[in-house]
Image 1 (cartoon, rainbow, N blue to C red):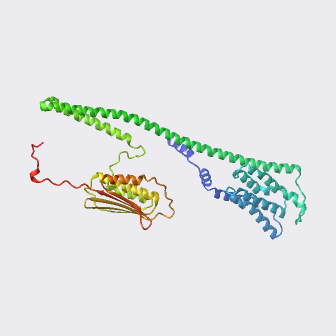
Image 2 (cartoon, helix red, strand yellow):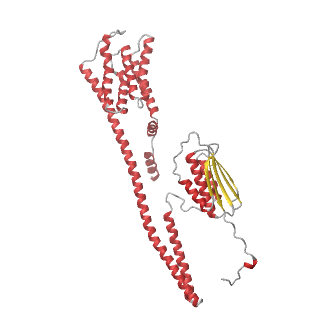
Image 3 (tube, rainbow, N blue to C red):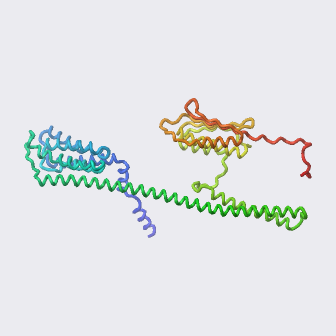
Length: 429
């Protein structure tokens, strides 16, 4: 029973084929209007066929062509409502004069064209469509007797008919304008809802940041307390050790230092956890390393870049240098995606004579890529990282239209081994 109820609820919530078709047509308005025009063309042809077609083939072709000319322009009723109205009205008048029928059911297309003007054209100018529709419908009835038509025709519309035609035209205009206002109000409500959602997220974020700041202050006080205890225990232990190294207070003081240090370390980790952005789902990630350049290359490749890595072994490089070099490559690839898009990228790492050189070069920008405006902070950050290790940074365009960033890091020279005579003795302080 539970499975049956769950399945029934899922079936109710899942969109049916009609909803899916409606959503697809809303996403493709031109296709929807083309289908409407085709349906109206089929409708007016069927209605006219029910009245009987003219006996001559030429008249038959003329009637069918004028009916199709009334329906086909409705495929562009959203983008060009007034031109569509003009074409449909002219085709309707020509059709009525070429083959007059004592009936108004052939005016379906002109009513749809009038509705399109009221729905998609800007008011109050769209109100003029009332007169256009009424004039197009009534003009053949009054102009027929004054023209040399194949079949003489007397006007069949009296004062009441004129009033009805004008009222029908005004009703079509009012319906279109009402739908325009309804859709405009719905769009404004969606925009307001989106703004409220964004403001709610900002407010929530601010509340979280404020609460984290308060907790961080509390943790700071705890860490400061533990560090003060460490300092006090260390001084007390040093005083006791100078008088009696085997005194029980020495062992107790050392144990207290260890306990306070562990507590301070735990609180520091909690404080660091608060400072990590909660948008990063991985939490505290491993320290970046040049061994992980393939991750950066994979991210660039996922964005469409053709990435190549040519790197010397990085074993033995100081971790601080590896972190800074990794960040330089990361920032350089970010700039490539911003300013060049999907292009060729080559990352080169060379290590020689106490120096590490990192080069990131890219080809010319992709033809369809629009560069994003940069703040210049990326190059400043790279230069600061390189300068920290006494290196240099060069960035500039290449001859092929691309860009290249070259960062040189000076590696710390290993400390020389002391001469045998300078080796301190075990008792030396």
